[in-house]
Length: 341
Image 1 (cartoon, one colour):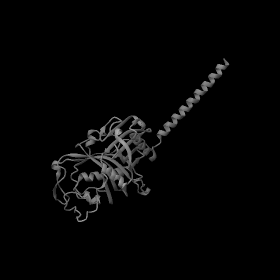
Image 2: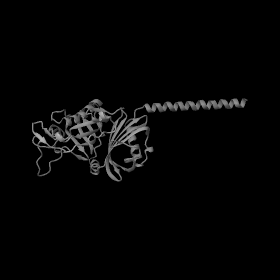
Image 3: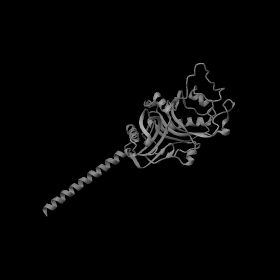
Image 4: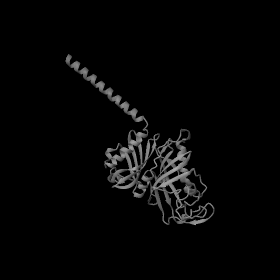
């Protein structure tokens, strides 16, 4: 009897100790999950996701049980689409780390079936897992090679006294879209004088005039020119072919580096939208003759409260296409909104 009592005491003691250890571990786990996921943490999730893609195995990524996954606006099963064809990372890499909201966006070159392509990726991190993964694969070799050649990565922080709030950054980026859609040359254009835009791996602003040619004059031209500055293009009123900019989702905002990452759709209505008046009263007819839409991932770098650089990838998609992350009403809306937390 004395032997059993001693053994029972030791068993109870071990049980209490084990329970205490489990409770302590649980407490530590809750405390750790409550800590914000910093830059290294957010970018680490991207790296894990890309490595899982390379291995063609979603189970290698820290995915939540109820994770939502889309590719180019389509809700797919994990393991489908790019999961079957991704072969390697490329050399171009741009991160927008939204520590406050727990979001991270990535624009980078990849290799799909050993062919250069571009990937826009947005991950939502919750409790140490990937709760949402939105991918936009641009299967465009010149675009990927162009971004790799240009190489801007926007890693430098904005001086502390010049940083702006999340709301200000979103408002400024959204004003760019509104200015294009308004297309009257009189909108709010919060653009640096040295603003540059890069689309699909090429500069679409401030391009040098080819030898033997004359730089187009915004006062007489009937279409906008890549030789113009960002401001000249918007003030010309010649971006008329964009009849609507909708489903403006700002999925990652980084005030420390002045960065904003967005997914949007540019609609081209064609028909009667092709005829319009320029700010100086000229009547012009131009632009696409059939309706279609650009699907776009667009990143902004703001300095001194103004747009300094723009990076974008865009692909044509069916007219009026939805992102897969919005209701129909949200998808048709031209209001800007921050991604849900």
